[in-house]
Length: 430
Ligand code: LLP
Image (cartoon, rainbow, N blue to C red; front, side, top):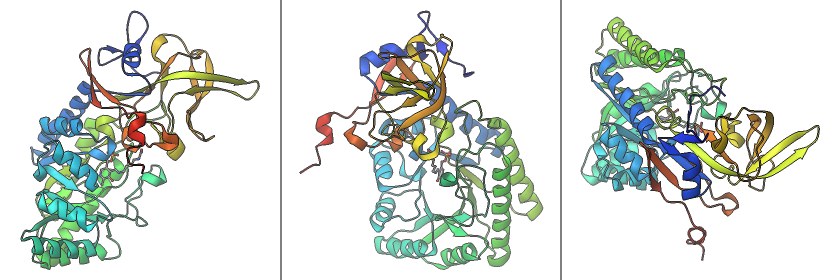
């Protein structure tokens, strides 16, 4: 593993200046640990790049599906970000955290009427309409409530980003958005412009997640700008906003090599500006929705190693006290992570093992072909880069309680999400 890590004199992994072995002892395992400084730095980098590359004419909306809890909305707000929410539950959490509704972007390919009503009543700043039916429904609902629905229209730009098929969204065959090629998107724009109680602010696209190079983002930006120009030509209206979605990839494992962040921002903004000039339209107000690239690398999960099972000539299993219930990404996407022993972080790897979870399912693995120092019961295993789509995708499979989330910073730690107790597991049972 060639990831840069901090190790104490005792050889323990340090996270945000805290000894990971002590964290494991104090809070128990499995334990999600989030490095607050890393989260805030990522948010600031995004925010500053809006200043640098778009002259401040834009808003970074943290995609909270990557990791949602009250504290992360508070931090995003403190750092001057907006937020993307994709369900009534995320919207509720953000509002309860005191997040300003006008800086929320509300997504979903099948929002319920109750969710849309909640968004309108609370003054959500932008609702991303996903279909013509939703635009019509929003207009009727807004009229009923005596308000106007501020919307962006989600367009599927026909771009096939090279990432796992479950997290690709820009291609024609997608459940999301209005398709550009078929004319559905233009029809949606005209409908939105004609309806009395919706205010069409602009367009949205999201081409996928964990994308490693700038090319598909550039392509999407150009296609969307071309569409804004076409809308102007056909209707006379110049849409003011363009939301480019999220999807910037991170380095989970040595095979992952995302383009440098600044280069990606520079190349995409340049493409947008150039297309704007070529088409004779102004550069729109830009929104972006990064999730993984804000919280992913800031997170580490700590587990205690239990059973060690050696099958001669086959493989060695190291089982830990969590698994697909706290990190379903291996079973879903065969996601690869970096692993190390938090209590012997400086030791050299001397064997190759399969890290297994404790769930009752053979596929419940966290990694195969993992290089580790010889590990056995009581060792503390750290899995790097688990800040995104781990806690937010956790489940109670096998009635495993969802672990707590602890925030670390400058050698201090604090719980930001309490761990579930067994009594929590039966609280809805009748
Ligand atoms: N905006 C929209 C409309 C999205 O659908 C997503 C992610 C994002 C922004 C944020 O994308 P990010 O910057 O985090 O890549 N569970 C999968 C990822 C699903 C992503 C869904 N949408 C995983 O664990 O890899």
